[in-house]
Amino acid sequence: MKLYFSDTMNPRKACAAARYLDAPVTFVPVDLGKGEHKRPEFLAINPNGKVPVLTDGEFRLWEANAIMAYLARKTGSDFLPTDDARLIEVMRWLSWDADHFSSHAGTLYFEHVIKAKFAIGAPDRAAVEEATTRLRPFAAVLDDHLAGRAWLVGDAPTIADFAVAATLPYAEEARIPLGDYPAVARWHDRLNAIDAWREPYPSERVFATV
Image (tube, rainbow, N blue to C red; front, side, top):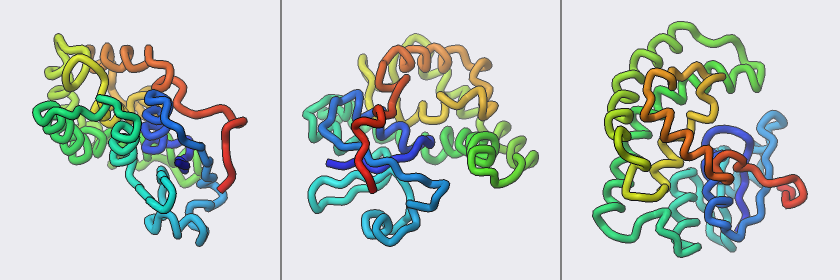
């Protein structure tokens, strides 16, 4: 298997999952600044022109959450629960996150982190204000859910934790008001105690070329 990635938010969670699961993948860095994700050879793998992408022989899979799920199944891990009740709960949190939490936190990440990283302009103040306002009620929902819980679903991390927390490693730089939600902050502290979450990217010696 090969995992094509960059050091940005969505590839980060796929890389973290691969390392957490000790999945047998070769990591392939894609330089977004040089436009490697728009080259024909990459578009043949993912016509969306985005990372991450996983290849497993002739099989091609894009989208970080799907990649995490695939790696969990390939490695026989309960990181994607096998029982229906917990699996449905994981799916609920993935849907909620995509539509609500990371939708708005991701705007803050884009405005404050990605724009600076790729020199594509100053943050849009109106977009930042709107995203922050719209994020807060969903952050409160997450905070309430995590009060008294270690993880989102069950007693161990799942792909839901890695998905919903995807913006939080950038919270300070992205100006996500993490400090206003203590249960969320404690949950992310627990994630940061996991080596693969804290240091998701492999050393350059295990990189392959595009």
